Amino acid sequence: MQFRSVQNLLKNVNNCAYYLHRNFFQITKRDKGKWDLINDTGKVSVERSIPEHIEKPPYYFKHMEAGNTLGTPEIKNAEQIKQMRSSGKLAAQILRECGRMATIGTTTDEIDEFAHKRILAHNAYPSPLRYAGFPKSVCTSINNVACHGIPDDRQLVDGDIINIDVTVYLNGCHGDCSETFLVGDVDERGRLLVSATRECLMKCIALCGPGVAFNEIGKCIDLFCSEHKLESVAAFIGHGIGNYFHGPPEIYHYANDVPGEMQSGMTFTIEPILSLGRGEIGLLEDGWTAVSLDDSRSAQFEHTILITENGVDILTSAD
Amino acid sequence: MARVLVGVKRVIDYAVKVRVKPEKNGVVTQGVKHSMNPFDEIAVEEAVKLKEKKLAGEIVAVSVGPTQSQEVIRTALAMGADRGIHVEVPAAEYELLQPVHVSKILAKLALEEKADLVILGKQAIDDDANQTAQMTAAVLDWPQATFCNKVEKTDAGLTIVREIDGGLETIKTKTPAVLSADLRLNTPRYATLPNIMKAKKKPLKKVTPKDLGVDTTPRIEIISVEDPPVRQAGAVVADVDALVAKLKEGGHV
Image (cartoon, rainbow over all chains, first blue to last red; front, side, top):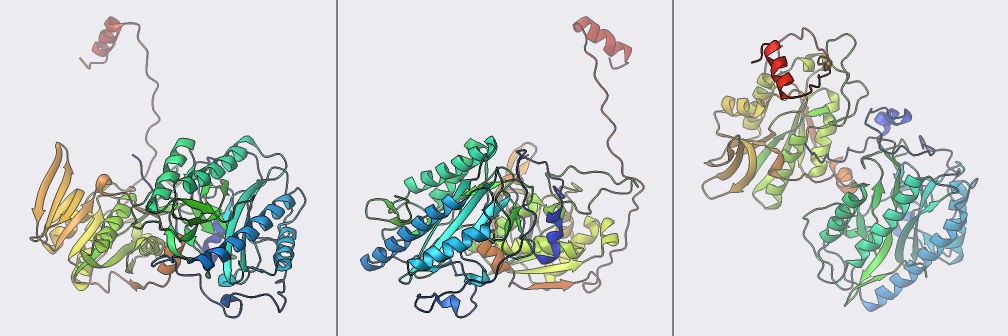
């Protein structure tokens, strides 16, 4: 009998003791590769400062909850689209530079410091900082961390796969992208996972266009996953983006029948997380880091895209 | 508009290799992954679909069990239920809790909450009892539609397609009614992060069976729990004659 089990609810503070033991849940292990398991968050450095002249988003000044992703997606005008293009371009550039830093011995905190400085140098603001209380400027998610990993003092080791998620706020506009990088010599399963996830994202983007249903993306990911024997981490969604970090529409990374169609002028992200295991996650004590419950690795790739009159444009492309 | 009561049970996850405790009085549950009973996920999904079609107004998710049962209520809330009720039963008593008790609790709640529909999973994957929906309907003296494959609302009530041994059976019923969800009724949705965050704010009320006037005194005693016997190796025979001879020997023919 085949069941599709609902994503295990994010466990929090009191229950996270579960994660400190390998396969404590006694679920059959699917990811049998050789790699370093992330158990806990390391030492997180103090908050980095932002100079006066940098334009800051509203949540810098007052703690706000994560944006509401329900409702009618915004259709952007030519001026807004122009701003989105520059934010997207900058995010892509910073991400590429960060990728070069993903080497053995570098700590994720060093990557964060680098990204922070580079974003400021372009007179932009690192969107993750202070968003719903997030303490750092980028998200760094290694191996069994699905997403929202907090940069800390852990050094990258040979065989790690690391997702770096960069979002910048430039001229009042956010641009969001991420990529999973290979550190040193990664085992075969890891390399397959990363390349498959990249391919999956590109496939999803290729089908986008005006009039296309949003749920085509979820269908595409589901089909891709069954072909490649991977699972999508369903708990995390793509989202609309603009003057706000997260807004409508909600992009589900699994087959669904939620209504809604893409229209020219919409900008949103597609950010599938594909896993070698069951795709169920839980949160660590820090309230952010999402880890797999069955000690399996996952990879993620993300682009911010714009729906145009006759198709789709990747705003965060690295060219 | 209709209020729907959905029952959800916290069970050992289907993928876990269940082990018998060395004391042979139960299975190991400590530290083992638990999830919502898969048929209950289907029940919640059906309720949420009814709400999306504007055929239901409010969905109340109920779970009977120890403190950890709240986890599955939160999952139901993240899938789209509006509020939750946790009927707290201490762990020791929960071991001996049976559908006969749970059905009385659900019936009481259905009346208190003025539910128009009670939707349950057809059976739990830990006891495979397949009794709670039927008993709940009996206590309430409501019609029951079990093993639902399809549920449609009509002016008169509901038209339901059920899975039975011989195939599919279509029945019509008025509401209020009790339904039990079968595997092919729908495909449950995943709980996404924004919905999980929203679910944290949805109300979760706690009550006890005593508050509802239901007696949960155990009616059974667990004598022993054992592994199934180790499977004996079979024997390979050379040809059909040898097979017939062996069957005759064993007194099977």
